Each structure stands twice: as structure tokens, then as C-alpha cells.
Image (cartoon, one colour):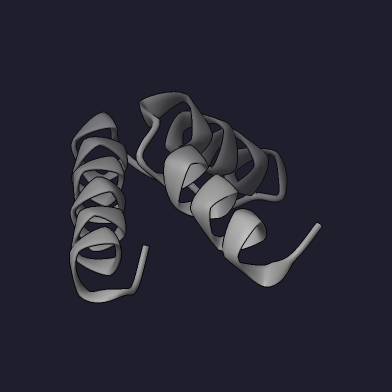
Length: 59
């Protein structure tokens, strides 16, 4: 898989709420406790970052 395709794939996954919910679930299993509000804020921030990356990087 070339770099451009990998980047596009990762950005697409980072825009999905399920990716962030899964990552938060993994962190919870490892002992990191988050309130539902914190989890929602992290998911929202992640989608925002992925959107910015999509805008500022070459497609």
C-alpha cells in the first residue's frame, strides 16, 4: 500500500466515531477512566483534527 492510500485510509478511519469509541474502550481496559463527557470531547476533537488534516494535506 503506498503512502497516499495509507494516509487516506487512516484519515477516513479517524473521521469515524466508532474508531474513537474503540480507542476509548481500549484505554478503559488498560485502566484509563474517562467520564462520558470526556469521551465525547475526545471523539469530537479527533474528528476535528482529522478534518483539519484532510483540508491542509494534499489529496
